[in-house]
Length: 151
Ligand SMILES: Cc1cc2nc3c(=O)[nH]c(=O)nc-3n(C[C@H](O)[C@H](O)[C@H](O)COP(=O)(O)O)c2cc1C
Image (cartoon, rainbow, N blue to C red):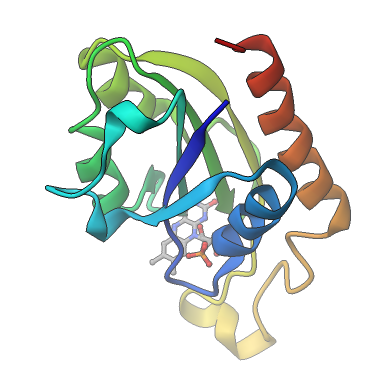
């Protein structure tokens, strides 16, 4: 099973922390979203994850742009870190992928360190996230998808 995760993690690296753990435990290849256009070999991977911090309710622009390039029929999943994990922030990018005829296998989201705006004055929020439990859950999420989608 070959899995790649296309990611961007530009606020405090919280999403990258999740991706690094998945790469370590599942052997997934990590690909910066800004490098995808013109170089990413979609056909080499059985599963493609899109991972991002959340900005104003959506995945980062570079990740959305990469999702626009997904071939029809490709299996995709979504991972994100956010300030308040109280809704599914993958809805917008999942719509992009579905419009391309790709298959949505689900999403995993957890909290990430956030110092946006006046939060910086109080040292930010979620300083300790993603925590060990969240990192483990993220790995379990990807492992389950890999088992359920064995070629
Ligand atoms: C400009 C900006 C906008 C944000 N918008 C949201 C938001 O709409 N909802 C949310 O839950 N978190 C929001 N956040 C928090 C980030 O999604 C969170 O800190 C995330 O862990 C950043 O991921 P990264 O460090 O991997 O880039 C925002 C942060 C910034 C800096």
